Image (cartoon, rainbow, N blue to C red; front, side, top):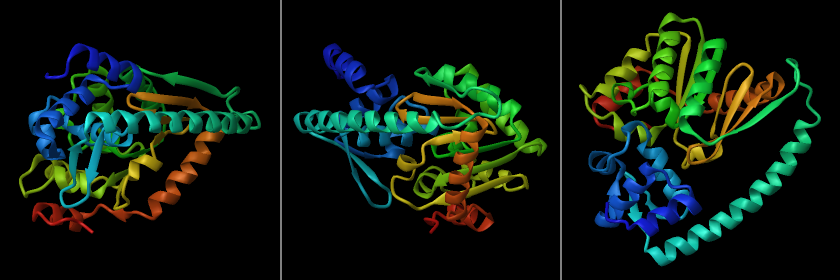
Length: 288
């Protein structure tokens, strides 16, 4: 890594960079510009989460997105990057403060069927996955969007995490057994860039998933789809992602019900992932 220790510590402490963000940022520092595919071919990051990390860098002001087919990510000059990042951070803190007050007032008026509402900040990926696994095994339904959904397809290259491997395997077991209703929403450009070609393993995995009637998959062509729909919801709990590897975990059937309604509304407006979609990926076409 070409970044010095002082810069690494600053990025970690003040801007929430993880090792994966640092690897990508360091790679872009050297190459100046790259596609997501080039990044996960050359940077030491999990393939299933590379878009998530790139979006984090773009949203925090350190990387510029250049829209096209495929989308490219450009290293931003350090002075401008830190200025933009600080401006965005200040704006984000004000938004968090306003949202916290608004949500707290709403939560105070909601009575949970199962007792008191539990709210927990989760700042560790392993803890998040461990909680996720527990909720998955005890729920009859699951709704997921974005990077977490893609992990079902990229399961042959899971990150080095025991809990995450257990979670994805359990997720697949529930899908194949047909004992849970599962809905997934993907970003279309993400799938198109990750699963090109007839014999690509991701394309094969996606095609296999079409066999299971209780698994419903759709895709969105909305730009920054994950930015306004960053949550996972089960029967009685919700995970809200508000920063890289940081979540608000809420246990409440009534609040979960409201998020299920929101998710289902968005889900109905998305396009189905069907055999025609898979064939478009196999032929190298961008699904519309």
